[in-house]
Structures are given as structure tokens and as C-alpha cells.
Length: 126
Image 1: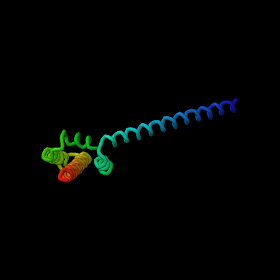
Image 2: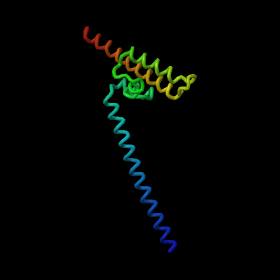
Image 3: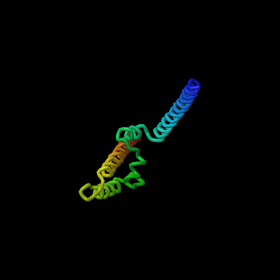
Image 4: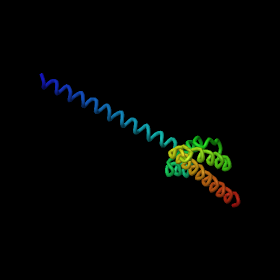
């Protein structure tokens, strides 16, 4: 009887293992599909900036509480959030670093837009 019990446990473990691997593959495929969809929604340069900086444009806008890419509004919100989260006044270094990364991402997006506008201006001249 011990032999049959061992076989049942072994078969059960194999079934659970296969189901786990199948679920893992499905989750990985869904994750890749979501990443590809996000990449297609952004321009190639913008998507590359998101990957390099590690924060998406939408997330950066949410962190700094801005709806448009207005440099003055971005700077104003950045200054406020950076001061409030300063460790010397009881703030969080982690949150302060998120604010800095968000500002970097939005600055990069502004640079990409300015470069695109400059190229469109050159094409209009020719």
C-alpha cells in the first residue's frame, strides 16, 4: 500500500507542477503583450526614455500631479514635493527620489518634444 500512496503523491506533484508551469507561461505571455501594447502607444523615443529612466510618462505625471507638459507647472510641483519630502524635515528619501525620477522623465519628454518640433520646422522649410 505504501507503494500506491507514493505513486499517488508523485502523480499529484507532477500534475500540480505542470499546472503551475502552464500558469507561469500564460502570465509571462500576458506581461509581454501588455509591455508591447504600452510601447506601441508611445513614440519610440518616448518608450526608450521610459525604459532607461524606469518610469513611464503617465506615472511621472501622476507623481508630480501635472496633466500637461508645462515646464513651469512641472518645476513648481517638483520644488514643492522635493521640499516636503526632504529627510531633514521628516520626509521620505524614497519619495524624494521618486519625485526626482519623475522630474527627469518629464524633462526628457520635453526634450524629445522640442527635438521633434525642431525637425518638423526643418521639414516645413524644405
